[in-house]
Image (cartoon, rainbow, N blue to C red):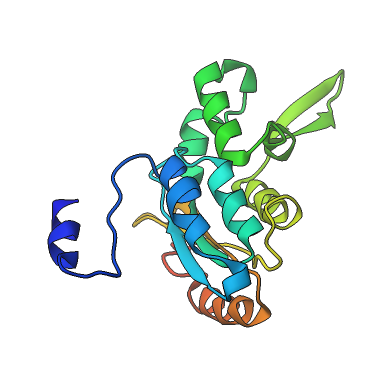
Amino acid sequence: MHELERLTAGRQNVQVHHGDCNRILVNDVFPKVRYANYERALCILDPYGLHLDWQVIKAAGDSQSIEIFLNFPVMDMNMNVLWHNSDLVSELHRERMTRFWGDDSWQNAAYQTTQGLFEQMQEKSTNEEVAEAFRVRLMKDGGFKYVPKPMPMRNTKGAVVYFLFFAAQKPAADKIVKDIFAKYAHRGEVPNG
């Protein structure tokens, strides 16, 4: 934080905010970007885990002026929430996921019920299925008109640690990001063999 303040010292058009981004973005930053004034903004949301509240994403979408890049923290989800046996997940982690997703519909995206030999069974959805459900949610409930398929971001072993989402109001931004995502979609993949 101190380095950011040093780099921006004396710049009248830069403000550094201290505190919880869930409050500051919605209350202090986003209201300054007004659609009626033909203003536009790009917000990069890079939570380390499930620390971002849906209200931030929704406020950006509802503004009609703010486009977002969002790191969708599937690694944190898998470690703490999206377990094969959902009954073992703590209430704290369920609440974190609900705050991030915006409601408890994440459970329908994360688990599918199938008929087993003797009874109904709950199966965990794939990371890609969960990401697709969130992509649809960004358009249906988040206020964004364009949300291309997210780009998987991998660690050095090729495992997806998060999905990079882009959400926009304009088709030109959608096209540009789709081209970029297509170019780098397979970066970091480890060949089978």
